[in-house]
Image (cartoon, rainbow, N blue to C red; front, side, top):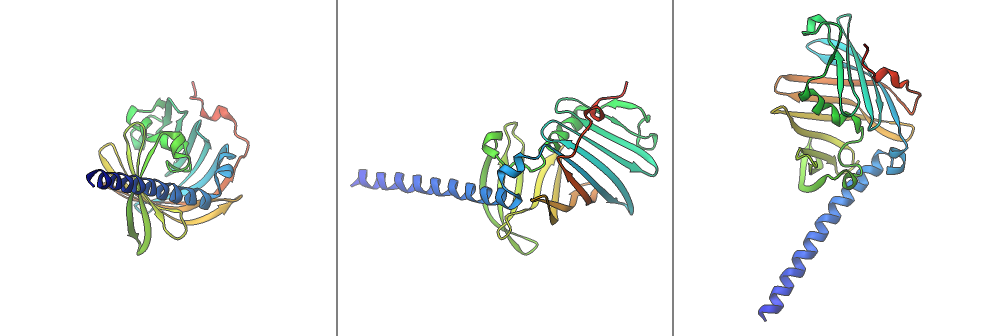
Length: 236
């Protein structure tokens, strides 16, 4: 009798774990499908984005060129001054105007900023193809985000970083992500999804940090356009 009860407990636990794993994969699969499908996402090699940043009453226009999983360059204009940030996967450089503590000349990017840049090389986030990336995904439960049901997924990366991803239970698109960078909690809300060549992108991103709120509004996205890789090289 004791053996029978033990076997029943083990089987029940196994079924519970299996169901849980399938539930996570089902959510992730629907999320990938909502974005456009894995094949479509993997066919994207470059993304050029034009957006503006609203901060303290100012509108800061920026252009970003991304070679997926290879390199990214962002250039912003702040009160007539150009600010550039470039990361190639291992090293980075930037140009800061004097009004922002720089010299206006190219300089190496500090180590703490390099770590933050790595996430920009992957435009579709840690859930897409998460097993191949070595990420661990757990289903925390269902929660309300702006009064809508969302799946709360906890993602742990191979480096130990933890992100909380919230997936809309109806559209299966990402609505919110929470993470910690340099000891600060960061929350980003995603909205205004639009389709570009069969792939959905959030055109509005509201970022909340301990230092204040930032709003990024995208005006244009171009996929797989020609990119001159010289733009990622640090000027001599």
